[in-house]
Length: 189
Image 1: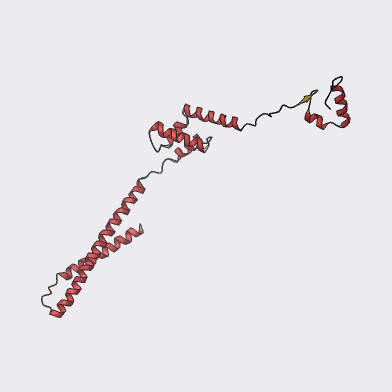
Image 2: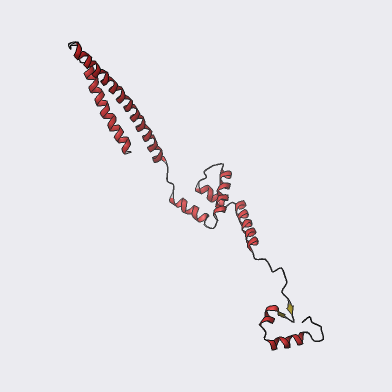
């Protein structure tokens, strides 16, 4: 904004200089002598060139000023929005991941035929039955994929004791257990 004011001030100074030069052009030069006339004509040409230079500079600075003012109007006309609307949107999307929020926003764009849905439209889309069902089923699918699978080999059980229980037994306990569980049966031990 300071640049616009500075160029505006320069433009005003340039306008004053141009008016001064225009009044100097109106002076009657017929009374001067030939060498002075040549010298004054060079001065006059220089003054005219300066006048044109400053006129174009003035026009450019006024155009720049107008462009900056138009930009400034554009900024001041934008609304910042209701802060409570942002809070409601945050609460509505609090339990969703970033990917799920993107899905909700994409759905809101299509449902309301708007490339930039409002927070209220996003909240409505997040409460839609289709979206809630889709998110729920996606979460269940991911939970099922991340679940630890059951062991592929079954745990061996001998005489109501698992292999872990047998490993913890002392030699004498294991001997007694083996005699009791194998009475009359052949074992590969």
